[in-house]
Image (cartoon, rainbow, N blue to C red):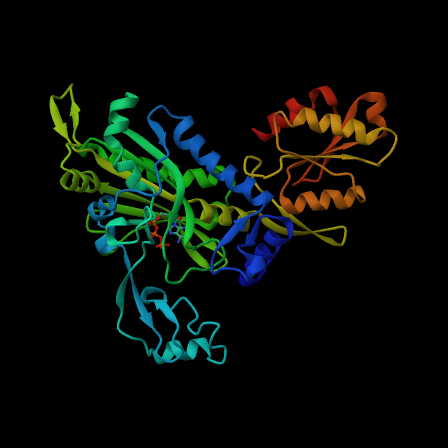
Length: 445
Ligand code: ATP
């Protein structure tokens, strides 16, 4: 399948089946904002839950946090965002499009307002203004007065909320280095060139964790988290051939970072970052210590020393991961001369885990199917469907990635058995109703 085609198919399936809609559509839309529909909301929630499970619940050395989006503007002065969180902006003198200077060779110049201009011509002529730095933080005002004293920012990353709570967590959670603080939440960046569906937007969600270590231990933990984070995508079914780890060259590193690597996925539009793992030294805590005047050092009683912990930060995007899982899951397969579209989501990510059908709408089958669906709802997200031929109902579930379909038929009344049909193999087997939930739980583990 040609790559651009695949993106079009994902966007169209997303709209048609309720994964992602263009935002504010009835008002003509708003650039690069998207709304997650019923299935998209489930998928995205499952991505976040899988991350939280792996990073917090299944470990004893990482705890969670949910800090506020609005923070003291001094946080962003200390972190360097007010000064340095900028991208180089250029204007095309011919078509007037605004572009990120480091994206010029990747994006079509010539925006929709100038349809007559050939994008690449513009670009080849290189008729751009000098680059100037554009700050990506969204500004707003707190309270009823709109003056500079009331100015605040929408956070451009969740990480700083973690650093400013380092002491609170240290004092209240009985954790001590090496330990981590994890957070999932919305971030906002006034991107110059958003695009590629939900890959780059101005409002997005991040999953970030700051892992605090003794200064001499950072390399060991950097290697550890670099491996862990790559494996997370593989364990959730992503094709390892489409994943790679890209280590940053030393001239690519931020001045405070001693090492950084990106987990990249081969999207239809090319290899692109899903997540960055960075060794940040004690830069952030040192900055906050300096700007707040508060001591943020950890006292290591055993070694009788005070130190500012070094930090390893795995920072992932929820929306990017969701898009990558969708792209990776999409298949078109020819079955009996017909094409079936199937989303081969890992069962943990699938928005609906089980669909329950009565074979026909009579002979008590709908009632029995409803009762079975209600029983399964205690364990799974379940979808009940009784309309149309059963083959079509299977296809509809394949297209949204439901791993199992359960069909109630004539034998259910006499033998208390149902048919379980598996999405990927399309194989069917008969299962006793009393064993159904246990069997499905086992298959989905
Ligand atoms: P990029 O180079 O693509 O702009 P970044 O290196 O600035 O990304 P980070 O600041 O490291 O990104 O943010 C961590 C993660 O947050 C990214 O790996 C990505 O998954 C996600 N992310 C960052 N910006 C956006 C955005 N505009 N839209 C969606 N997700 C984003």
